[in-house]
Image (tube, rainbow, N blue to C red; front, top):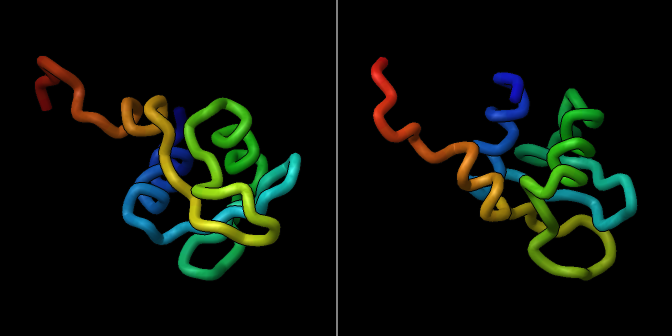
Length: 79
Protein backbone atom coordinates (compact mmCIF):
# COMPACT_ATOMS: atom_id res chain seq x y z
CA UNK A 1 0.00 0.00 0.00
CA UNK A 2 1.33 3.43 -0.91
CA UNK A 3 2.32 6.11 1.56
CA UNK A 4 -0.49 8.28 0.19
CA UNK A 5 -3.09 5.56 0.80
CA UNK A 6 -1.78 5.09 4.36
CA UNK A 7 -2.02 8.86 4.92
CA UNK A 8 -5.61 8.75 3.72
CA UNK A 9 -6.33 5.93 6.19
CA UNK A 10 -4.75 7.97 9.00
CA UNK A 11 -6.99 10.94 8.10
CA UNK A 12 -10.05 8.67 8.24
CA UNK A 13 -8.89 7.26 11.60
CA UNK A 14 -8.48 10.81 12.94
CA UNK A 15 -12.08 11.65 12.00
CA UNK A 16 -11.02 14.20 9.37
CA UNK A 17 -12.68 12.51 6.37
CA UNK A 18 -16.11 12.25 4.83
CA UNK A 19 -17.09 10.29 1.77
CA UNK A 20 -19.90 10.39 -0.73
CA UNK A 21 -22.35 7.54 -0.61
CA UNK A 22 -22.20 6.42 -4.21
CA UNK A 23 -20.99 3.42 -6.17
CA UNK A 24 -17.67 5.27 -6.74
CA UNK A 25 -17.31 7.01 -3.36
CA UNK A 26 -15.28 10.21 -3.33
CA UNK A 27 -13.22 11.06 -0.26
CA UNK A 28 -12.95 14.54 1.26
CA UNK A 29 -10.31 15.31 3.88
CA UNK A 30 -10.69 18.48 5.96
CA UNK A 31 -13.49 19.49 3.58
CA UNK A 32 -11.29 19.33 0.48
CA UNK A 33 -11.61 16.66 -2.24
CA UNK A 34 -8.83 14.11 -1.89
CA UNK A 35 -6.07 14.57 -4.49
CA UNK A 36 -6.14 10.88 -5.46
CA UNK A 37 -9.71 9.73 -5.96
CA UNK A 38 -8.52 6.54 -7.65
CA UNK A 39 -6.78 5.57 -4.39
CA UNK A 40 -9.91 6.57 -2.46
CA UNK A 41 -12.02 4.30 -4.67
CA UNK A 42 -9.50 1.47 -4.21
CA UNK A 43 -9.60 1.88 -0.42
CA UNK A 44 -13.39 1.77 -0.43
CA UNK A 45 -13.73 -1.12 -2.88
CA UNK A 46 -10.90 -2.98 -1.13
CA UNK A 47 -12.81 -2.84 2.15
CA UNK A 48 -10.45 -0.52 4.07
CA UNK A 49 -12.90 2.39 4.52
CA UNK A 50 -16.66 2.69 4.45
CA UNK A 51 -19.36 5.30 5.06
CA UNK A 52 -20.42 5.54 8.71
CA UNK A 53 -24.07 5.42 7.62
CA UNK A 54 -26.17 4.71 4.57
CA UNK A 55 -27.54 8.25 4.34
CA UNK A 56 -27.43 10.01 0.99
CA UNK A 57 -24.78 12.64 0.38
CA UNK A 58 -21.52 13.06 2.27
CA UNK A 59 -21.18 11.08 5.49
CA UNK A 60 -18.27 10.48 7.85
CA UNK A 61 -15.79 7.89 6.63
CA UNK A 62 -14.71 5.14 9.03
CA UNK A 63 -12.05 2.45 8.94
CA UNK A 64 -13.04 -1.18 8.64
CA UNK A 65 -11.17 -3.88 10.52
CA UNK A 66 -8.94 -4.27 7.43
CA UNK A 67 -8.15 -0.55 7.49
CA UNK A 68 -7.33 -0.67 11.20
CA UNK A 69 -5.06 -3.66 10.59
CA UNK A 70 -3.07 -1.72 7.99
CA UNK A 71 -2.43 1.06 10.51
CA UNK A 72 -1.65 -1.26 13.43
CA UNK A 73 2.02 -1.32 14.37
CA UNK A 74 3.82 -4.36 13.07
CA UNK A 75 4.55 -6.95 15.74
CA UNK A 76 8.28 -7.59 16.02
CA UNK A 77 9.08 -4.69 13.67
CA UNK A 78 12.51 -3.18 14.20
CA UNK A 79 12.81 0.46 13.18
